[in-house]
Length: 389
Image (cartoon, rainbow, N blue to C red; front, side):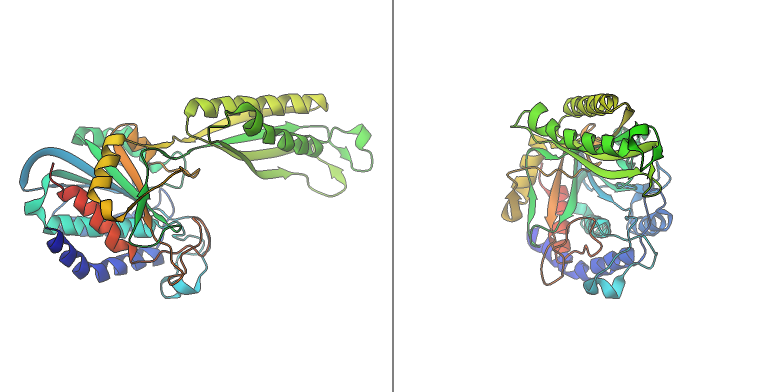
């Protein structure tokens, strides 16, 4: 079976590359992937899949294998692009034709990889046990997350999914390898917004005003103490202020300043604790200067926590190409919403090389992938489906 699968993948590989480049040239942002969904659906139906559309964009494909089994295994890819103007000489033959939107996080590769896996599975249907569910998910990059909305429809639960796997391109590992770990893999992603109110006035008479810019500066400095003084040093967490907005002119003290930032943890209770500290620091620092501050928390994606059983299964299936990560990463992923419903494992697909100019980090305008990783991704995902129970 291994030789048969490798031969099939070698034959399919050039077509999978063409799919990836088509998607890269025609990116669509989250919740607006209408043409992408139509294009994917057309291919899946051609290969014999039942295709369902529980949400407005994205789709779920179902195929029953010929080998008797009660197993229901799901594989997931995300299909949306980022609101970013891309760059990169290595991509000049297939740069985005949709201005201001680009696949600079690898979702084009995720989608073409799962399409390739779908083609392999349909071609090897006599060898497939049980039922395979393929999820082409919308809006991974946009809160509240396409994964959350799909799970909330209840459609996947009705299919009886038992295990689920997903992947993400990884520029920090070479093609031909995958990486993951049991337990915490990716952090939760929540945001905080803070409105700081002062008293406006002339910049030449600061004693007659309450300067919210100075208050904001003090708050930002104090927020740095949360991780160092309020969190167990053995636990990972991040608080970052990513946006400060206030003022209209150099000679005017404004009435208001706005702060926005992110909280990253591996525990939702810890996220709430950190937000309480943020809110308290904002309120009391502002009050000490004669101003006020109100904070609100925008809950994002839960942490990605890999199930022990499915992770061991992945290691056994792809032992020759798997690297075990020592530490989790602080980026987030809405694959976590599936893991709250079904045992599952998320893994990274090595995609970085100097040859393909694909060593840039996620969301960089020059982000690219070494397309050779398609062979590894399709092999691993198809092998998970074909593996003996």
